[in-house]
Amino acid sequence: MTVIKEFLRPAPDLLAAFRGQSPATLHEAMGKKGAMSFPIKPLYQGMTLFGTAVTVSAGPTDNLMIHAAMALTRPGDVLVVDFKGMTEAGPWGDVLTEAAIERGLAGLVIDGCVRDAAAIRKMGFPVFCRGTSMKGTTKTQPTGDVNTPIVCGGVMVMPGDILVGDDDGVVVVPQAEAAATLAKAAERERMEEGLRTQLRAGRTTVEALKLEPDLQAGGITL
Image 1: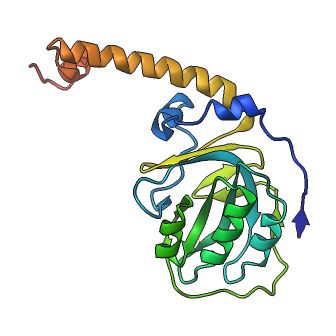
Image 2 (image 1 turned 90 degrees about the horizontal axis):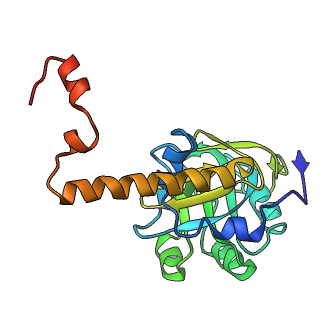
């Protein structure tokens, strides 16, 4: 068991620049990397999050290490939990949500399930997970790690990485790539706006994206 209390967090201005960013655009900007697997989705449509990763390896039937990690969080952190993909237990519910809100957390991402979904929705706390399970867990197994590298939703997550989520899912931006990713995302947004301008002018997507050679290579002429 390893518990690391302190780690390097991104500069506040760098982190703030990710507010409102599209996870899909960030994924594309990183060369189609960082997207968590399909099952990791918002508990309810419309939930969004961005913040700094505090990582937890726990489970699959005990949530003691989640409680330990919670005590080490700071405002703006996102708790990222590798719960081993367990879907027959809900290690997170309304009590932990209350604790997270009081500590100023920006959200939870868990490769597993949660419970008390209606209460969480009412509390307005962003949760991204595999689904819901009413089954509880124990709090007696001090096995697992806090703030070490984990895999959540098929993506490596380091403490201090930046997470952004919306209805499409969650993307992980490595802290070392954050500034470059923002620049590439802005470049992609400018490119896409240029495409929209062409479409509004009456061009087809085939013309705007210059897809004719690919179609012709397949023997298709429009």
